[in-house]
Image (cartoon, one colour):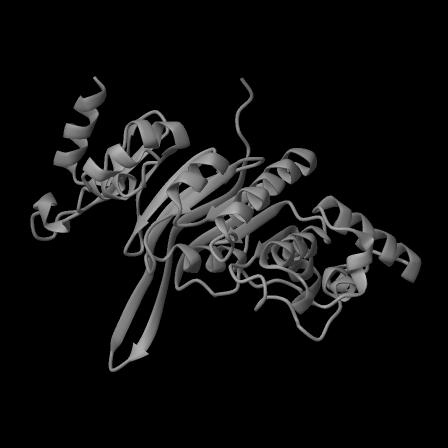
Length: 312
């Protein structure tokens, strides 16, 4: 079996915000993980856990407080020439949560999609530019008649497809999808996710898919990372994480997924996560440790031995 190629390497990434009066919010606090070429890594956790900030720091919208982000072995946050920075931005794109707020209401769909094409000089003539716009519209399930319309004329699902077309216009390698379906109706969510899966197969894209809907994350992701208060507490392959969650916080998240059978749902018991249950000693070091092949958990030495024993 061929060894997986690392596309993104995140090493001890920290993103702190000074909110005044000497207070600092540790939005991302020492996160380490890799994203492999061609995979989808799902990042989940409750609102405010730092998952969106992680995505925005990885892509360079925020300058990291500390740590390192490597894209194809090159530091995202290191000083670069204008040409190098432009090329990096072309290869890394983002799909945002609110498909309306992220589209300029004064621009036509054609100009929104072609903005990146214009910036990076990817079309030599106006004809080539429009041909590319039409191709992108068709790729995301819209048609060329939509090119001259404005964002307000579309539904939420259609606007998100426009956002996806805009991200794809510059032929990126890596796409961060930040809660891309949370603002959409449930009936539309599956359409957008299926579109993303198809585009990944066709174009060899790599995704970081940020969301709080665990059932949808399982459907699209190869591996899943779980964040809690700025830290990654568990990371494993999607099936493994759902079948064998280890960290108590992961168990609490999974227990919150509704069951489609009303009888089971009526008697289902949620697991409530209580951080005090760990009973850590003062000053005890927690590390992100591999308790089984590809299954990592943030834990103490004592917990590590217990978790390892679960697999033996």
